[in-house]
Image 1 (spheres, rainbow, N blue to C red):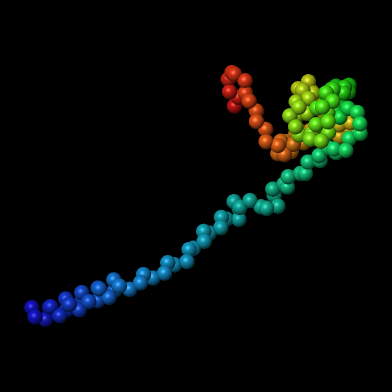
Image 2: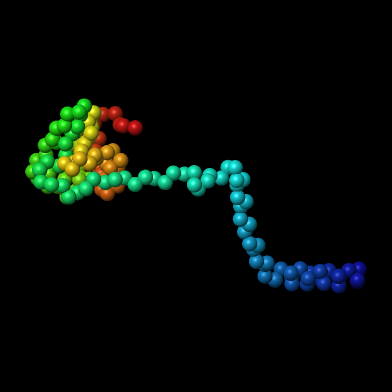
Length: 142
């Protein structure tokens, strides 16, 4: 029994010294393996979004918009104060309201210079302003 005590003492001393050592640094993270080439999308395969041709804002005096429905063209009448607003900021709500009314009749909206104001142009206008739309009482739109 006398020989066992020094061995236990040495073992305890070794455990204490091992416990006081700093922990090893973490290993470098391994990057995930890339997916196989067959499932990876090709960068050239995605079409680049086409730029939207915005109508010019330097319109001549007179009516700004006209509505063309089934080959007939009619001027979109705007009050004088609204027309001034639409000349400076065509993205504003009253201007958009008149253009949408034309489209609901199945027409196309053209500027006085003959450039079409398409729904894509309207989407670009919507990016310029923050619209708040209130819904009337009734079933919510989805």
